[in-house]
Every structure is written in C-alpha cells, then in structure tokens.
Amino acid sequence: MQEPVRFDETLGQVSRTGTWDELAVGTYQAIEDAVNAQQWTAAAALIRVTPEEAVELRNLFLAWPREIVDWIGEHGIDSEELARVRGRLSSKLVTEHGALPDVDVEWAAYLALTEEAAAACGAGDREDVLKRTALARSLWQRIHDYGVDLIYGLLDCAAQLCGEQVLGDVWNHLMRDWYDDHARRFDAANQPWDATIDQLKTAIVHGFHGHLSGVDRRGGMTYLQEEDRTGFRFDPCGSGGRMLRDDVTDGRPRPAEPLEFTVTTEPHDWAWNKVGVQAYCVHCCLLNVVMPIDRLGHPTRVIEPPTWPDARTGGMCTWWVYEDPSLVPDAVYEQVGRRRQGQGQGQGEA
Image 1 (cartoon, one colour):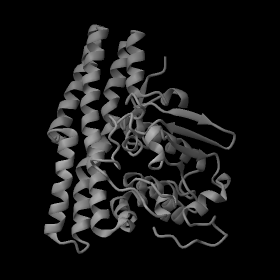
Image 2 (spheres, rainbow, N blue to C red; image 1 turned 90 degrees about the horizontal axis):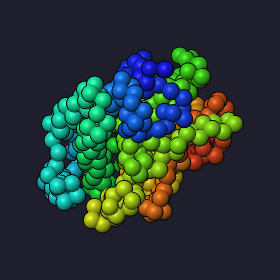
Image 3 (cartoon, helix red, strand yellow; image 1 turned 120 degrees about the horizontal axis):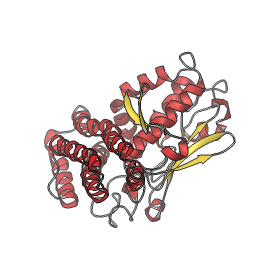
C-alpha cells in the first residue's frame, strides 16, 4: 500500500499522497476511514500531517493582524480613531467567540492533542482515537475561525477608516513576498507548466485541508475534471466562503448583523469587478489572477468566487487550473481589467 504521506519539496512540508480524487477527501475524513479499516499506521501518519496542513495559517494569524494595523496607522489615521474602531471590533469578536484565544497557547495544546491521537493508534482503540482526533480538530477550528474573523474584521476597519478602495493596497502589502516567490517559481523560464500544474493543485488541497473546508469542517472538496482544465469546488471553503454562509456560522454570516463586515459595494479590478466580494476573498483574486497576469502574462488559477448576499444560502467557490495558459478564456483577463499578452495591457487598480 502506498504511504499516505510524503515530504513534498515544493511545499517544504510533509503532505498527503494519492490521486486527486483521494486528495479531495478531507484529511479528518481520511483519518476516520483509515481507523475504520484498522490501518493504524496510516491513521497515525494522517493525524500527524494535520498540523503540517495548518501551520502556515497559524503563522499568518499571528503576522497579518499586526501588519494590517500597522498599515492603517501609516496611512494618516488618527491613533485614537484607530483604537476606537479596533475596540469595537474586539467587542464584536468577544461576543462571537467568547474569551478570545491566545493563538500560541492554543496551538501548543492542539499539537499535544494531535500527538496524543496519533500515539493512541498504537493501542488500536477506534473510539479513543476518533475522540482524541475530534478534540484536536475542534481546537484547530476554534483557532482557525477566530483567526480568519480577526483578519476580516481588521480589513473591515481599514475600509471604515480609509474607504473600501484601499483593500487591494492592503493585500498587496501583506502578500508582497508571496508575489515575488510565485512570480519566480511559476515563471515558464524556471519550470515547465506541467510541473506548475502539479504544484498549484498540491497547494490547493494542502491549504484547504488546513482551512477545514466543507459544511462538516473536515477539509473536503470536490475534484473536477474537464477537457482543458481541472478544478476544486469548495462547499464552502473554510475561510472566505464560510464567512458568507448561514449553515456554517449558526446563521451569523459575517457581513450580516451583528458583525456587519464589509463587502465590495462597487466594482474593483482586484475583486473580479464584482459587487459583494468580501474583503478576505480579495487576496485570492490578487494572488492567483491579477498579479500573475501582470507579472507572468497569464493567471495561475482561475477562480469563481461566492458573493454576498447570494452566497448566504449555499454559495460555493471553484478554483480551476488550465492544462495550458493559452486555454484561459479572454473573459478571465477582461474580468480584472486586463488583456491577454500581446493584445495591449489594461489599466487596472492593482
């Protein structure tokens, strides 16, 4: 039997192995399947890979809030006004999440629970392993959902204080190093597109396992295969999509009362020129569509995002990777105010 995990050099982390259909299954579901089949070594390896899928997000939950606050402060906002808006956000988050988690402390507790669950596989006790795994997953979900709510809330603060037109600039600042890394790695001069396809898809499944996608919050998604492209559909994704839906927020989607976090109210190139894109989702457009077109000449992934308020009752998000960049439709470029290379470059906001 194939080993369920391996070290992936492109990610620099341990990640799961398998076909794309198999990788579309959430890791916590894969763990349960292995336990039910009494494949204890595989179950332990899958349990231990869950922090690998989550660690980058944990690091961003620590870094990005500070960087957003610093960005706002550096753009002419009075410190007392910023403190007032942040205080109001904190009150909302306390109401939503209860006592706010200390990410470092709760991450350490999550790692300990995960290792206990993996070690328990040695005894072959199904109920004990599943109970410990469920506790670990629940704690990571608490850390994760607070982290994305905090980032969304701080982006809302930036929009309140500076106007929604700055959201693209905030994300460009947060992802400046990512832009350089992606542009260098995915440049056709550095590696063939076939290699890029595998890396793009691997990063999708790895990352969205960590985001705990799906209504059951086990990290699952649907793999799609078409003649000229392959894709993944999230119902919903565990970050931006989750925050728009009633069924995974106990009827409290983040753009609605009581949080009322911002969504775009007018078209912007950095948000697919759509109204109703929530501020957290903006970075997906910039990183996968706008920046690659500007720096590589084509998008790396094509995204069909959910929008508010339609997404509230079941909106999904779909990410596509084309078999060749030349197959990406012109409409994808035009949607973000660009044109295919050689046809003249549109003047965008990003």
